[in-house]
Image 1 (cartoon, protein in one colour):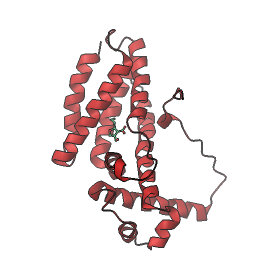
Image 2 (cartoon, helix red, strand yellow):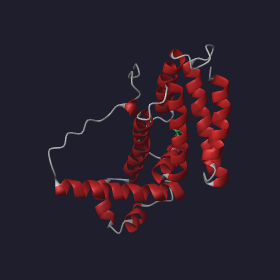
Image 3 (cartoon, helix red, strand yellow):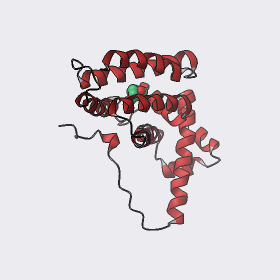
Length: 214
Ligand SMILES: CCC[C@@H]1OCC(CO)=C1C(=O)O
């Protein structure tokens, strides 16, 4: 079916608050704690070697209490990957608020994303679970497509603003940036546990920007 005009992960979910609900809030906080603990374990040791018991132990809860929030390890993995992708619209909002033009918005957005890959265990876990997709019997979000759509829309604005070389198509530039970023963060992860991912991305991204900028 036709892809939505706005990339899925930039569509805001409107949350209507009807006032304090202590019981619901406590449950939401517990869900977040369980998700963060699962992300730390998934990021470090992967899906197969992580057990619900280990997640429960990490948050000092019973296995049953964890199952109340997430009915299976697969459901927990889906939630972590979804939370990984939920990071990017928030990052886009922050960068967009700084008032850069479209090309500089791309540069700053991806530089901030590289820092998230270095520092944020939910982002790291989401990336690892996407690699391990074949081992996970669940409907994980399709990888790469939302970043490609978002960068295509930003780079289309950049092209219209004369910030992109005329012969460069926004779609091709977006696919190239996604491929380069994926590769840079993956190699940094395998070789150095992502300790140098910000520098590696600055290097690769810098060369690509040099090739596409007007
Ligand atoms: C921005 C590059 C793409 C990004 O890098 C790691 C990863 C995890 O699968 C990604 C994704 O699915 O969008």
